[in-house]
Image (cartoon, rainbow, N blue to C red; front, top):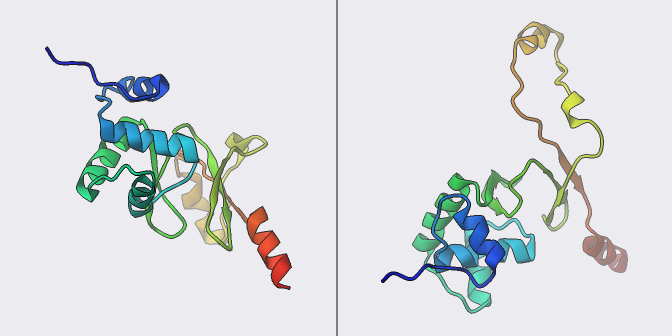
Length: 157
């Protein structure tokens, strides 16, 4: 008789199973890491973090599971400002606040009516074409300097 796979934390099992995937040990570790750290890891950073936790995983297993988890909507995948794919525990629409010094990212929501933001042409001759575009999504990226980098910069001066 086959035993049902579950993660150590029921909410992780539920999150994976709700999207039609089996909660394998690799998937449980990936989702748990993202939920616990709130980081936006590249695959290589995630591999290192898992190893530091004493939970090594092959790079092939990691990539296969990241693809399945993100395609199913269990985790989010996006291209960061560095042009590299990153993974996020937050799957509903949100934005990122990014430190210009260290690159740290924090999940944020935009205050105010984001749905009212409309693209305005920079060049007047683009106005006609721009009016015919169908806007599908809005994305805002905030940048600044995180508290840790502010403290380092103050100490250095």
